[in-house]
Image (cartoon, rainbow, N blue to C red; front, side, top):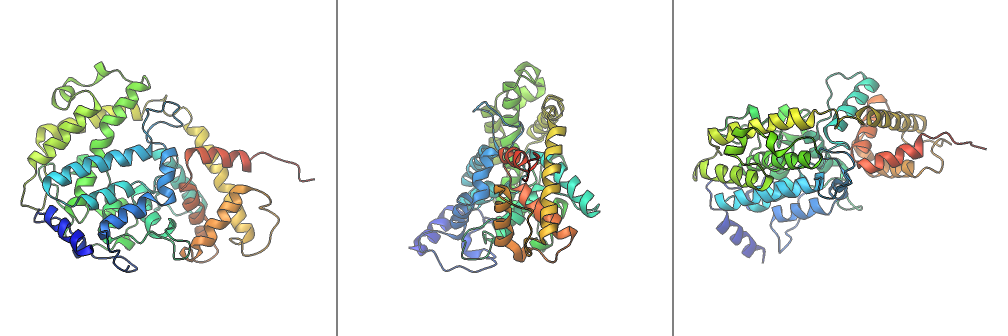
Length: 396
């Protein structure tokens, strides 16, 4: 049966630079053949059944704690990216399963409260350890999640044990640096890349597969129009405010924008070469739309009105959890500190499950544990833990 699946994959992936699972660089821990699924299909399932994936539904995309069910969350975003990427891959005869696995896993390492959460964790870690070079970046943390933090099987080691190509696409997906790309030749990284050595997203460069490059672009396609719609829904901008150039080239609603961008990428990319391309017209328009969103949505004071309060909440949680780890030496000695607090029970389970990841009992190890733990929180769980940890209660 697996031979039939591989033959079907080969028949669909006829682009000369398509990545087929039979030629994957493999996994850290080899697996026996499934019998019914290709390796990239198995990766899709490993991603969607892990806990970090489920938590994306309560993580900020742009707006904190949306009560409106039609405002995008991080979970919806990854599905939007997968949809865009599959359409491109299918038409260009690339590997649909590979782009879907990368797309669904690309944001697993996002902190609560979106990019503000990244800023908070970077600041807290630096203040705690004095390490000024360290940055929390969700691209790198997403690789850390699938390699070390997410659990696939309680009986085995932590980590999802994904294929090399999926892991590379995840850590190299950066969708915020569109302006740095050469729109006429968006090429995969071709030199050697050691994923375990990547510490900053700039170290990752472009993905090593054409499928990874598709996801990197699909990430941008999926959020620029969707964020615009949410900004309009929130009353931050009006449709009439969209620059006329953008409306003329891309359209003024998300569906039209996504369609025009996908169509342009497909039509502009060569059929038999190892790169993607966009037209100059569409590329300039998407850059202009992204700049419009930045000025009129992402940087609006209304969006930041709770930023200081949320930062203080995460700082308080960080400090308490750090002190607990320091006092108990990562729970290796008895202490009366934790007492009947549910979040500390969760922290203890977290540490026990992945303790091999951390070396030593020092400030950097404790800070990394708290960052790993906190980065997995949903927005709602931050609020819950804060209310549990911070109130002063009598002990007698």
